[in-house]
Image (tube, rainbow, N blue to C red; front, side, top):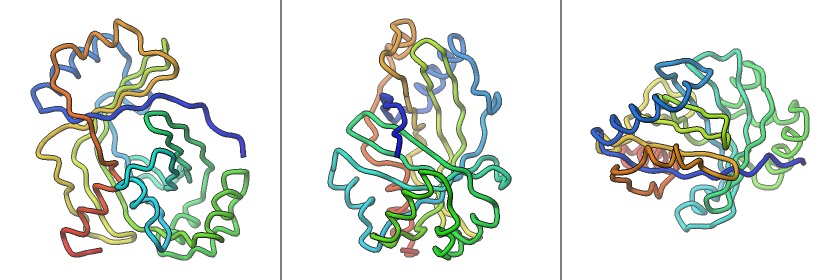
Length: 226
């Protein structure tokens, strides 16, 4: 299967005051994401195997790892993608394939026989991994994102808030505690331009050690739903 292009990816926690200042600076230098000014909701249904390999690898600090998820936006189910997210330390790439609403609903209910309907290289890869590891949907993660982009360096800076976790197909979700902090992600190809790097001066950053997937799994465990 053809790989996606590696991109640098770094994630941080910012206090509300620092996040507000950084967002103001970024908005002066970068354009809002094409999904719309003001932000949008992201929902992701993550898969793991019966041994919780993806969860354990992240918690153990494994440098090279894969995650599978279904992703859609603003609760609209007319555009859903099955994505493979590959990470190697701070580098990552992503590939995807479209799935139908009917296929999504079967995945959500845990009907993994639907993998036989998947097409393309990504679909074939997911099917092969499932046949070996017995993947199944384990958690739904949702949050509000505001994103900004710049062509130079293909830079993308996002601000994520209001994280929630739910069991697949559940009508009830639970807030993921971030202590009112904003998650900021910085992604770029080969270089981060100096004029964009300068917007971070003075802000107090904390490196984000856990992924949203892990945070959601832990949140469900704490509520007794795992």
